[in-house]
Amino acid sequence: MIIIVNAVSGAEKERKFSDLVHWIESQGLKTHISRGDFTTIIGVVGDTMKLDPDQIRSFDIVRDVKRVSEPFKEANRKFHPKDSVIEIAGGKVKVGHGNFAMIAGPCSVETEEQIIGIAKSVKAAGANMLRGGAFKPRTSPYSFQGLGAEGIKLLLEAKKETGLPLVTEIMDIKYLPLFEEVDVIQVGARNMQNFELLKELGRTNKPILLKRGLANTITELLMSAEYIMSGGNENIILCERGIRTFETATRNTLDLSAVPVVHELSHLPIIVDPSHSTGTAKYVKPMSLAAAACGADGLIIEVHNDPPHALCDGAQSLRPEEFADVARSVQIMRAAAQEVNAGAETPLA
Image 1 (cartoon, helix red, strand yellow):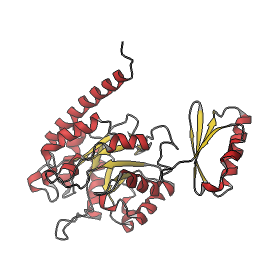
Image 2 (cartoon, one colour):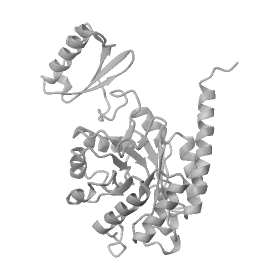
Image 3 (spheres, helix red, strand yellow):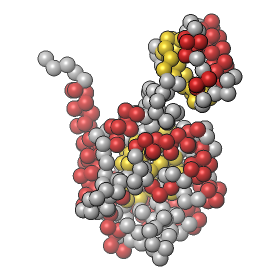
Image 4 (cartoon, helix red, strand yellow):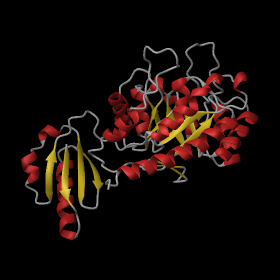
């Protein structure tokens, strides 16, 4: 349920507003407040059937009451009309509402020399966050599984050298203590519906990069975000990384329509992973440009200094100079898209 309240200004209206919120919460419900210039929205989460809309409308500051039919509540744009901006590393990097994330780095951390060298290269090319896998979920148990705790230590060394905030994937709740100095915890596609993990991450205050599952709908992605948000952590960045279809020309099928759909349904930012979705390095640039054109809030791209000898996903990894080219091209595309959108908002003569 959402309760639309007239602009709250002045001591008397603030008192009435507080009384309304207190009364709702006294019913055992949770409130989410979003203040705007002209209206304030109270999102109500829980068994709202116990609330009588007509009784709520009797409060003279209430303009309207609406029930929300979608199963995701806190991730819903109806609860939070303005875009959320996720702040990382104390606001050093922001994602959402025009703030674009450029996340780059290797699929997996291999050596100190490798991760620090790549970190310096991607930072010089325009990346504002460093990705790198310490724990790697692999289809085959015989494939390289990552360096684990040692990999996180090497990522922290790269962060110390470059100042880039870190993005790395968690595989299990038991590893959470190792992520204290990690800036963004990634939940991979295979763990999108690991609900116990999501609930535990909801008790943290760290930004979470939540990837869409290989065979999951957009609604299911938002419901996974809801698991985290219901625990109190609202710092979530969604990620479209391709879904499994009948097509075999690419590793997955990149569903770029998810970007505008998510922006319509939710206030959370959404970035795109062109590396895992296509599985082929030569397709990363055109898909990155397409993602920027359709309004994505960022990109997460795999970069390796020696792709043919990478221990993981070398075929989809760009060389540092290729990433620099993509980063420049994406800036141009974003500027062009903003100009087109600005023109579309201007009435034709």
